[in-house]
Length: 479
Image (cartoon, rainbow, N blue to C red; front, top):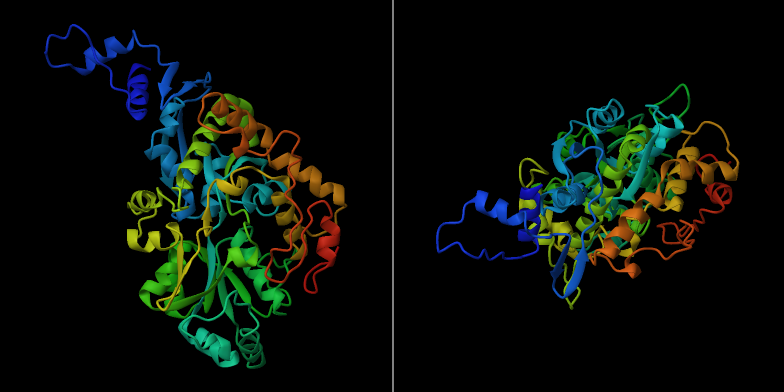
């Protein structure tokens, strides 16, 4: 505890002057003895009083899993900037081989929690694939994905749409120019293969959405076909994120949907062209969450709140800007994430998107300050409406095999998304002077973001009318 107190003092930039040292060398033991006399519960930092509230933790030594993607950043930053430590948490971050292994290890208790696909707690809780009650009280980010096609497919898309024959073609780019290519493959009896990272990943639903908006059928899931290829014009298969570029280069897949830095890697290697981002498919869509088992939360409620406190601070740090709106911490974040124990990609590749720009081609570099959003726009809050969108897509493509009443969607969202935990953590941070009340949804907010048409096809999504939303699609289940 004394070492923790000293670390926290140092993290606030507090210098402790010890009287009576007589110019002698001050040892750690001296400092620890001095720390016993220092009240660290009420420290003035920058003119604001921060009454630090340390929760009685049920478990302080924790292991979290993650996949090597830039959107694991809140976990990494919470560790590297000392936010976990300031809550009394000793956290180990461990990379996992794939999303299934990560989920299985959370379920069996080898991991206390993890960086998860937004669809994983939902899929597990409703029993699609692995069955377990997984919850989330923290959304790690908005946006962050892209769809990349091979150079050859891009060239053919340009032939189909002259507007794309430009150093900087107009965006957003739909899949309209891809449809004739897919149709030709089908006529010739060839599979048109594309990659996504997991059946319940945002990537799967985003690439399906993008394809279907152009009249390309991405296939249904059925109880007999769990691969999701029934009636498919495009065959979507699971490919681990770090393997996407090499699989594209080998010709095994012709395109993919993945998070960063693996779209930018295709540009750097000169093997593919990102054609759109999920910001254009659905503006400010949820991407990853921090997930734990419901049983773990029941045993460790205070620890869970402490974790969320640290993650909120990390998200805020990642989105900090100067007066000109420039992201001031992202370059440091890219440097940290580039380490082999985290993402393990070149810093220059990671910072392409992390610092507020996105490279579609070497001639097409665009400002995209909201490509990665970790805190602003209430990105870290677990909105029920976000959960319901995933449920609508699971039903649309057959992962939910039977029609459900509208109330089922709302009830299921409340089983999985836990905003009360987020609010407890945020309220403590407000009391400590580390968060403004205006930085979280106001009291009385019902967990439903406003209805929006910010989708590539202009469809209106109102989470309070999930059945009406599903019925509006030309391709997919409509009940």
